[in-house]
Length: 124
Image (tube, rainbow, N blue to C red; front, side, top):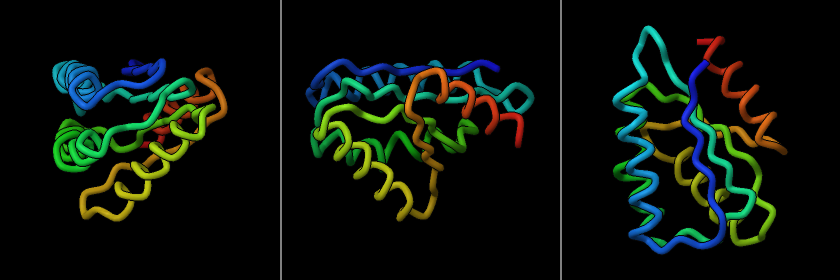
């Protein structure tokens, strides 16, 4: 099954974060279809904090667009740093509390996240 994988290595400022996530989402929108849905893996093992403006962008722009494009679950490789853990935890909490919600599932490794994303797609 096809899948978009974003990998973070350290801190990205708001503009960098939005640029990478936006480009990945655009690619997803162009290639995922109802007949051939794609998965999404966020490998945040080495990620730093996510700036507040980027967190808002995730909720207000990324999530609605991703849902419209057919994404239902984001598979996340657990962050190794406390900053990355806090950032992904905040994202998951805010996403769960929004009206249009994406599922977020955590995995201990990239390999496990890929398997989980595939399993989620096959379960649709």
